[in-house]
Amino acid sequence: MTGTEQTGLLIIGASQSGVQLAISLRALGFEEHITLLGEENHRPYQRPALSKEWLQGEVGNESLIFRSAEYWDEHNVTLVKDQRIVEVRRTPTAEHSGSGVAVAESGAEFPFKRLALTVGARARKLAVDGADLAGVVYLRNADDALALKAMVGDATDIVVIGGGFIGLEAASSLKKMGKNVVLLEHGPRLVGRAVGEATAEYFLDAHRSRGLDIRLGARISRFVPAATHDGGKAVSGVEVTVGGGTGAEGTAAEVIPAQIVLVGIGVIPNTELAEQMGLAVDNGIVVDSHALASDGTTVAVGDCANMPNPVPGSPAGERIRLESVNNAIEHAKVAAYSLMGRREDYAGIPWFWSNQADLKLQIAGLSMGFDQTVVRRDDERGKFSVLYYREGRIIAADCVNAPLDFMAVKNALGKRQNIPADTAEAAAAVADPAVQLKTLAV
Image (cartoon, rainbow, N blue to C red; front, side):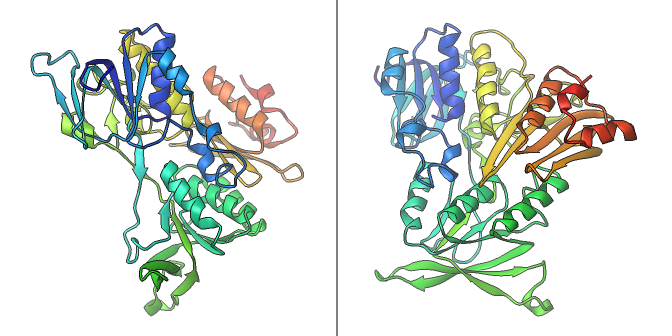
């Protein structure tokens, strides 16, 4: 099939969600041709290992690849690499059919009957003096990871900016590789958007006890340049104040040496194509519970999509944008049903994970809006969990090295069960690590 022939479905974004959408459609019996189009010059790959096992050299490139070239050929899917779509033109005579043409930056055109946007998100940039110096890097895709890995061998001092999942994962990996690592977090605690205060404190203590230099309340003034042998400029340090003050207020600025500065301060959903198409956008591409965008024909899936909260019992009208492998997979399955003419609500239990050194965090559910927490802690076995409640009902849990706690809460949420903690006796049972949580579910 040539680029000028109309494909049955054009999936823009060769991401986890894009790959899963193509796979799910074939499993459901979708027979038309599919084009899976990505702007990177790589076969579709898994991203979670980039900041951990791949960076440390524990897994190779091929282990990250989703499917073989033979798989796509056998399933009538054309994989297009290295094409960035900059415009989507809808067919004027088929206003509600969903057909049109996608135009790439190269000028190539890709006609389609139906369109899926699995365009993901991009790294949020840090706007300070010296941000364009050599050695200042981000870690969002394979090219970022390749660039970082090429630099690591010659570096002794590395500064990681951002105390979220990516920052902590990468900092832990780099520390394990023998580098001097300083992690700078602007906020008052780690992983501020994803976990509660008790979990944040646990991670702060755990990482510091493992030798990771973490500084909270850090204010980045600039990246300090140094001349290179070829006449260019590379980063040599990060000028920072810690604790919220400035030099004039009594907190002296410090320059932390660094041959590499890795910035991980969150992501921004890629909504430019959706905006150009006139689709509703609000912290992502607005979709309904069937993954349909505001035009009623385009589906938007994964990190780029803003959807109704899928957790059963969530407040009416509550919307979220989820960044996780699990969401990319489950949301793609819902979108596949929509493209097949079926309407299946996304009503799953979101879950997340993050591996940081020997700390394996698993999160079940969404803790936003909680009004009570119960902590389970077993220091002897290195297990730690926080259960979150809203109006007496379990809504989420953070579980560190506690997979049985994670599964108990995830299963309870899926079955609409509760793990009560509304009395002192019940809360004490939940907090007791010797009591299996699954036995408390009602």
